[in-house]
Image (cartoon, rainbow, N blue to C red; front, side, top):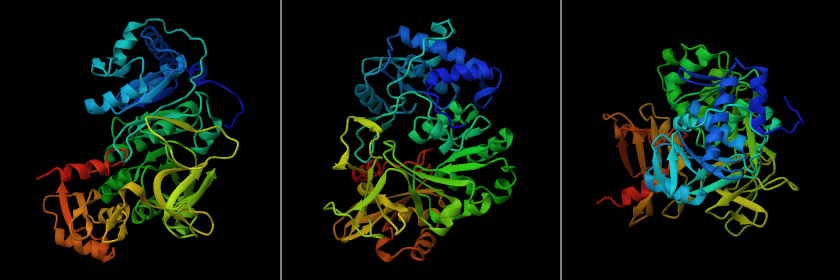
Length: 486
């Protein structure tokens, strides 16, 4: 559905409401909004936001859980020409205050009323009740269509304000393999960039967006079958949890409707990716590498990946270079820092609030380490800030985690470096596993997969998932918590 028509995000919702008023636009559990209902309710929300001081070009911090209300709040922002600034609904107070202080929004939309950093907190339900006019609004265009946050390895929040305005991007819809016949299932947290971007492209394509309140492996398969979903977003953590369901349960659902399964946000262990390719077919599995900053995007299909195991693909826009610590380009297959450059002559894809880009001239780094092969395919090693130096040897946590997660009793893992008087740092593994985990068996499992210096010197078992539903782990926090322990 590629078009050269320029249309605002708000106008797109209004048009779809006119064209298919009774068709479902967005669903979450038993809550569904038709296109007509989404249009009307977002008009009411927009007027309430405007009455509370939201203006064109301003930020609105949205701290709502996954659900229809989150989608309505974002659409309302776009109808005012404002920028939705999503955050987790479960953020600790101190983190939320720091983000709100950076964003300086007119108000914060969240379930809990009150005040944060001098800004009022109002629920979506309250806002809907404050306005009864659901008629059309003047067409406006947000100067930036999103402004998600990132803590990165430093733990200090920053806003990543999109360089693109609030206009429908027909090319990106086609890139995501979405159109008005799609039923897109989103189990990821919408406040994260990957779920946010792809979910709203699905909505603006005119398909049916189905959102899960939070990820659950069994529920995801149930919803694929129930809605005959054609499109699914996952991260490797989700893939692992689905794969570890009993085989009879996993294969008992009809997932034949799926045409496209995207995974991104974190490195995928090769064994897990291969298992999914064998299950669903390489033509359905798609992988993307890009930062929220979106200078460059690489893509690879499952079929291509089988020929280049471990690759995240070649750039479809912009350029990639691998540089050493002195800024010199390294030869193919040599690990260095990944630097990215957007397409020449194009506008900046983002701007930071609260941070500065790591750059060398026109090239920028997201802090990833990796290498390219002779044909320009990119392979990631790890994050620079996460690398562990053991007796002078580099250990990439992602490689150790991939080996840990392959063990049948490990549900999730995180590997960090802790101080060591002899080696400088030692590899410490945190694993989500049953209480009766046999550490000796786990160690033998790793010894068959990793060279000796990469093996964890210590193990820590936990009951809760180590990573969040977006597949993210804040290693700096894990390190700080363990360093502070007596």
